[in-house]
Structure formats: structure tokens, C-alpha cells
Length: 235
View 1 (cartoon, helix red, strand yellow):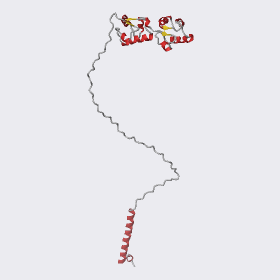
View 2 (view 1 turned 180 degrees about the horizontal axis):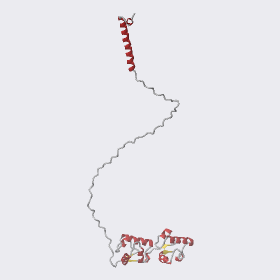
View 3 (view 1 turned 90 degrees about the vertical axis):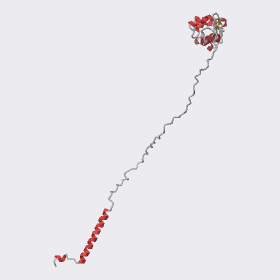
């Protein structure tokens, strides 16, 4: 038997071997296709070690409030009606003028009221009220020269009004020393607070005062004070 006889196959054997090869190729091809269709390999996520970690409570985050937008307030619109101004001047009122005294006419200073005093040339409402008010505080004028003690009286005005005035000393009102209160005493132009208080204190010690001699020893007064004050005191 030669080597050629060893590789010699019959027709049936060759047919069987061919089928076997085709079958093997189909199996190999199927395996290859199924392997390529598999999903790609994914690495598994690492497992967290929960045993060694303590879950702390989460701190709540502060709530952030968004500022709401508010539209600017609308200006109130009003309709103004322009009123016509009355340019017409009111009629001038004719106030009666106080008649002034003529040269040679006079008034008695202690009895004349403010309307009478305004009749003197150079005297208006303000000076008439000042002269009358000082007369009331004083108790009446004893001399015309006392007008120079009136507030605001100046030399030129005094010289201008004196010719229109006379004075009657008997029209004065005296101050009751034994009954007058401290308030009434200190309102007199010739007495201050300390002098009025000294009169009250000596009146408390001696009781009723009989005359000016009971007061002349008070250190709060001078000789000039008594000359001015004595005609206005009544005991």
C-alpha cells in the first residue's frame, strides 16, 4: 500500500468531510457574531463602606428670600384750576383822624384818658398807652417832669408835649403800707422786690406802722428813695 492510497478518499467520504467543514465554519461564525453583539464591559461602582462612616444630620441651609420687585408709586395727578386773581384794590377806608390840640389848649395829665392824650401833637397810640400805664403803676403824676420816666420818652418829645399838659397832685392815689401785699408793693415804680420785702418784714415785727419814720431805718432805702416814695405812701 503506497502513501497515495493513504490520502485517497472515496466520493462519499469527500462529501461527508465537506459537510463537516461547512458545519464547523457555521458554528465558528455564529460564536463570533454573538460575541460582538454583547454589551461592553462596565466596571462596577465601588461599594461605599457605610460601617466606618457616621451619617451626620444635614444643617438646613438658610432660606434666601428674593426681594420682590415693587414698581415705583405713581404720582397722583391732579387737575388744578387757576383762579383769576382779583386785582381790584379794596376801597380805602377813611378812618376818622384824632383832632389835635391847638396852641394854648391843655389837658390835665392825671384825668386824661388815652383818647385825650392822642390829641396832643406828637403823641400817638403807643405813647398814649405808655403814659397812661405808667400813671396807673405810679398812682398818678405829681410833676410833669415824671413824664421823662415813661419808657421811650426822649427829650425833644417831652419838650414838645409839656406845653399842652397840666398836672393836679391831688389826683394821685396813695399806696396803703399796712395792707398792701408784696406783689402790689413791688409793682410801684419807686420800689423794688427787696425794698417791698423789707416793708413786709418790719410790718410783721412791729404790727401796724404809724408813719414814714418806722421805715427810714431800713438799710434797703436811701434818703433819695424816701423823697420820691413818701408822697405815695399811706399809713
